[in-house]
Image 1 (tube, rainbow, N blue to C red):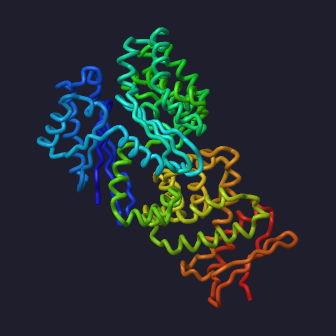
Image 2: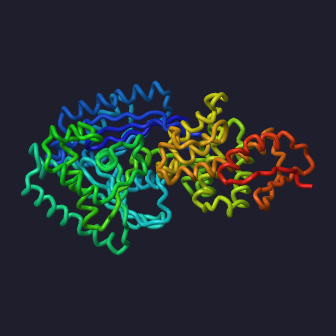
Image 3: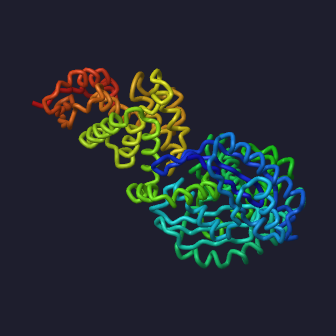
Length: 512
């Protein structure tokens, strides 16, 4: 089924449209956003203006037309700070229902925090660390302390960027007295949070929302002279955040608009956002800021899915969001999943039995496994050049829980499972840090042999053993008596990269 999730926020109204499959996984089909600024003036007057409500209705009408065009079966909509704090918020919600037929749930700050954590914990792997999550909205900031995959604290504070901007940053450029007053105010408002967070000692802040994504994009561009294509899991240091904060408060609005990575419509909100994030990090000793591009909308979808028993069963069976995400892509796009799974088993066996040769560890083994599972997804587009299509689909397939470089490594390994081997000047290798390029080459060399050993797609090679002697490596395959000449021929044709990479001769033979 297809569903749409709408977040009626204090700054923007967002919608995502997703297709949910029978296993309870979802694929994002479309996104839409409009900076309606419902919270402008509302957070102090406690009433939505007629102009803001009209703009909100027009935006929602456009979003509903988009949802109808995409044949959405159900629209889930939530409203946050500006609507829940306004005296006429109920009238606005009633008008949306009457004119558009959309039911809107006005959620509490704690429920907002819960849904945001649900989204982030599916987009990033939080199981083995203590982190603080911050969703910076226009009216409120939702904070969640997560430790080992469990929530230890969740708070909703009235520290959104519109609220802070209207209180402390009304001019074209930030004033020193206003900055000092804002810092003292934040210090008081965050006292309870510091008391709960400091004993847990998180070192990383994970931020969602447009304001934080803009901050990470600008900071990354200033440090690396480029803006990542996708910001999910991109990390910048506290030092970079502090430098950016100091730079932003010295700029006027027009200067800020010219900053690469900044949405010009956020030129007035980026200053309170930067002041808030820098204060949070400094006061709590957080050394890194990581962006997450999933937030409330995705949390609403996941909460909806979570009410279906099929998804609960699968989540219990596969708790790792990385593996879940890869398996979902493999099932959705693989024409021959049995072949992919068999090649994966052979690749891992070869990896394990050549450990002294490649000198790689568990992390690299996992990359090989996922690349093997996805190596043929490009056939979903076309068999011709399917290895290149696989690279494209993996890089752009919104795999969850991975760092950006990990996704590019997995994609590159899959890309080089056939045709010409990796070259340092190739586009795929140039996209990787220099230290990871030899890893791609070694793992691609292994994957090519494994793929060759299932050339017929009949699973004839049941197991393999590896022996090293002199200047060669012998791989003996167990075929249970079946004729595997096609497999041996294909694997031998793909042995050149293995032999060049490991400076050895590769001998393939059937076990007697």
